[in-house]
Image 1 (cartoon, rainbow, N blue to C red):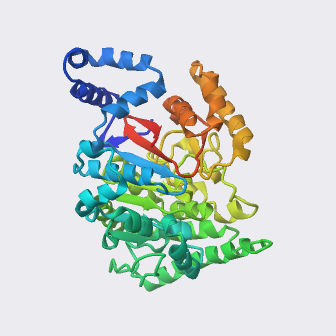
Image 2 (cartoon, one colour):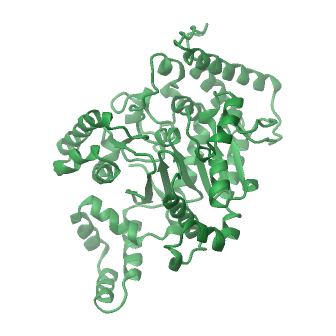
Image 3 (cartoon, helix red, strand yellow):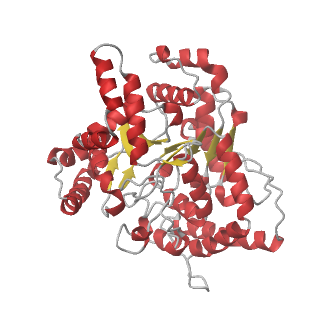
Length: 463
């Protein structure tokens, strides 16, 4: 079982029971509620554990979410097209304010303008790390033009333009530029200037960027119309594997610099925002920087920082990204990183993930923030329903066969209709997550967001 964390400590079943006892009792008011609270407080851990297990998984999740302390509960939001509605923007602002301990619950029903007026000074202090590698292989000129006309799809401009964040507190990076190691001038719209001033050999940097250039050349060939084949490299390896080889070698050699940069950056940031764009290329980026990815997963699970994503950045943090329509012929061959570069320490991947008995390695998400066996497909289209139902029936059959527990068929049939039913199904199957091979497929409509809280188990809900 993979550990989930809260405040840097293992947050296992006994901690979950203790939190439920304290928080639920604290939620109870006077009269009958006070009696219920007293009963919960006086019950043994074993009694409460048995009682909780008798509650259906999706209903148990509601209790845990209700009992959660927002400030101290690890959390991630997954979006399709970002925070594209006033409702989502207001909910996100409330989430961030609560995590800072700065929100008055009496203001819950205020509109966006009122939030900005009352809490503007607090919002200006929030710090954001914007991860932009999904756009690395696109031209800088096209990205700058997109920012002008479609700013809402770029986190650094969306948060500043519509939610009152101070641009000075938003740092945009591309991990392929290794901001913990290389001094770089920055590229407007792509990544900010970086100067870690870490002594290293010039030849190492030159070799790294030569391998990175190979991935750009392969990308450009596959983006042509019609796509052109990617020539074989003399080594017989893919361009992704050649890049992963030198990238991991550098990160291991300069591990102290990477660790220091991650510790400082992740502890200072309030939220890490993953950009949408090229999902296959983003998956390659995290696969080539597994030490960075591990530190990011640790930081989110230990509640040092919240994670929010849109589109491509949503898909790569799931167990599987096999439903993306962007995996065309030639792409996995060029850009899937060999499983030998992916860590098997149990935090990100277990041996079953990588030994061929689980999800196919070439569609594994390389930033696996979650233990829950799921695949996410943003930008919902009704044409996907038949395939989603087929795959979720297989997930149900595996779960029932291996656990001996039955799932209500209406949850599976309803999983094609939207996030709510699919997440109820996921909350059940997630209890078998470490052993589950077949993921639950979540089709996410635009203008929606999904939240995961780490509370001993992962609890999913639609925002």
